[in-house]
Image (cartoon, rainbow, N blue to C red; front, top):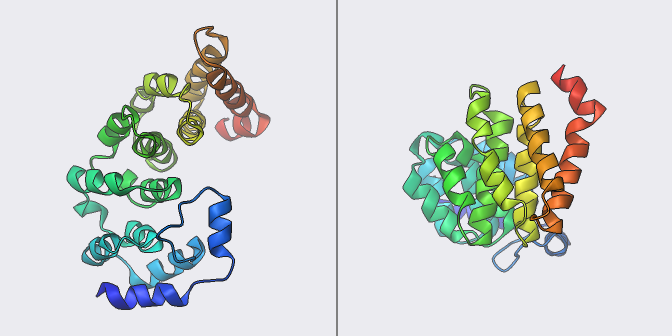
Length: 226
């Protein structure tokens, strides 16, 4: 399938007020059309998997076309080089999140990139590293507890990041890992408590640890783990 008619279809799905709503959420709308994500998912289901189309859509530079690309790309053809090329193009937090949730976690290089990106200095690649940890915890049913526990040192390092959108990724990773199993719940709570107690940690890390501990101890989470 060619990209041009798909982009024309995207333009037909623009709704008034969507751009303003996106901007209110802190989404970069410079190259956005104003198409809501549910509409993109409907279109992705129509298209199915089409990796060549995904590459062309990404190359268009249009925000929604890039999100759609993450929905129709073939995970089996997503290697580390493509992941690096796309992460270098991230210009908005939602694009980072969509790529991780729709595509990157399925790629063979996902575990390595989660670790590597969490050590990057730029905010969006770094956020993507932590969001990738969270989406792996949510979707990778076969991975063992130790694989996720290996992310805890990176989570502790990132908890004090002064950039809110990075910290939100860190928080999501800690909380999602802590919801996978009773063992990981206990280990995630240890990390959360350490963040609260360590004097050397900035106040942002204390708050992140406190909020994560509240959720991980909650009756709802504990009932799901029983």
